[in-house]
Length: 154
Image (cartoon, rainbow, N blue to C red; front, top):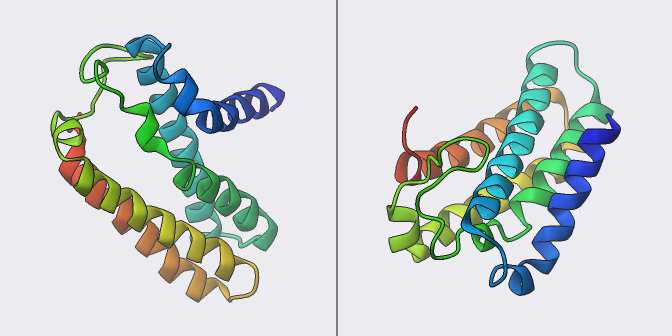
């Protein structure tokens, strides 16, 4: 668990320092960072799904939604600098070239995810499980919209 916390802290710190670091970081490192960030986001959505489809724990949903919201609003676009269009991080990148060619659409997709994740975090604190589950579906739709436009299908 401490290893995951360290990874998360490192990723959050790197997002705050991204404008300075993007110029100095190898493309492979940016690819690793974005792959790691998306894994944490996937882990968070999996935790939420398990709760809204199984035994519900508001505290668990709030923790997962907080982490998801932090990553969704951290400026992930900074992890897509020129030169990281291809190559390997932990594995070969699955970013399609369109994400580099169409930053306006990428920003729109990222903004939609940030809005839906923020709403999920807000309602997780007070709403019943049915409302949370409905908002979770909107978060997943925002994720899929980005994947449809910008991720190579594995």
